[in-house]
Image 1: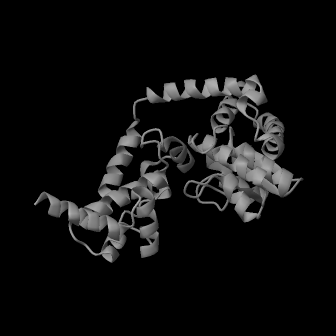
Image 2: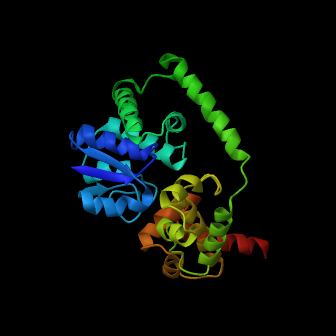
Image 3: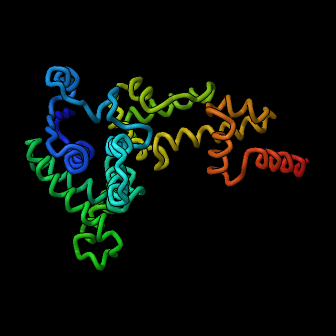
Length: 284
């Protein structure tokens, strides 16, 4: 089977071919073309498009295409789950998902800088992911001091990278997105990553990767849930019913609202509302 995606791969677009060749289809062929040509060439070549908006094999919420392949093809392997967290963290700039994510991003950024040949990058990537799988399968419990100086070098790169990121000024799209989210406070807060990327005319994979840098180190989904919980608290003070609050803050059902609210505040909504009322009485 042929697979096709955007040119200049770095992380997910190399991790996915490795996963497919090693665990789904050993004879799979991978093609890289300019972004604008992917879907047209997919039809011509009868290839499966992946890791771009609007296709089956792509990002969903905080999950990468690598995660979707694991789910789609029912690949049950703890080592692959460990690699998935690293790939997800590297591809979305959420290095809190796995401490190795920063190192993986640094490696593939460097390889991409050194080579303009996408197939060469893929060949190098296959070797790197083979090594990563061996680590995830047999060596993941080793501490950094046991693993040797390589980990220390990657940690140094990671901390230097973080220092550079902190000095960055928020780009125009981040300010526009913040205003867009603020507007959602007056609706049922149904904005998702795909809608935001279309409105901003930004690739959703890029938006997902860059988002946390400018929004409290949270993913898009986590930040929207945070806004929903904050709005729910405001509505509690206005004495709306719990059913009304769940609807007005865009939750699919009451149990979902209860679960997310408790995760963010440590209390279920009813108990939180009672504490608000007691606090008001105490100030009277």
